[in-house]
Image 1 (spheres, one colour):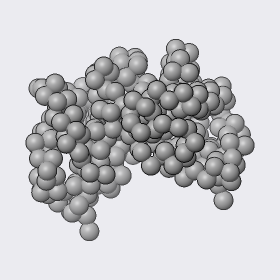
Image 2: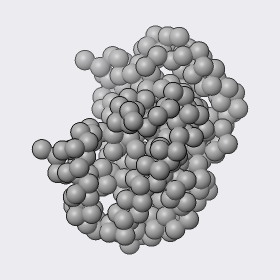
Image 3: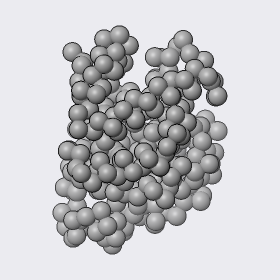
Length: 142
Length: 147
């Protein structure tokens, strides 16, 4: 599954539309991940995970920045995300299945907020993009 | 066996009451075929699946989507016995249709995304969680008779 020129254009266009709200949506995606897939909370036992948590919001902003970096480097996701991959693999030791849960919740969040933009073709491009991000994040795993 | 709390059941049934099964079914199956193109392997005789718009407009896709989602509706009426509800369909999908159960999980997640886009504000994290539990339960029940 290669990211076609059309996929990249679609993702960039949507990201432009999200503008400075990427942090808000990433935070919502995280909240949804914790609620819908409770096993993911095991990585955040040290966090306050109640609704509106400042820690979750801060983490959402981190995730948002990483995704924005990914959008800007779709030609070389493994390169752009290599430091984050090392971090998740060797320090945080997050089972990569969890990236899929967060990816899915991000799609849910974006579908909720931009239903008019979330047609089947955009859905497909975003899903592919997130799959590539997840692959890149998992690339340092042993 | 999956157990649903009273709250979870309400979250599911109250939303389901507002779903247009025919439309949502067609959309869910259509998006599955668009977003995960390998799933088209099960629908060779459906005619034109050559583009996203061909798929979404294909009458066979819509009809089959309606069938699939109607089945979901049966599940929702029997959330405490998903394995029972899907026993025959499970045999069918394994023995005759030869469908990898991973595809049930993919379809379930596509359905959740569609519900999010239709119900926006109402589709809170708690409501989503109840639906994720349901689609996971349905996928498991459908895979139960595989051997």
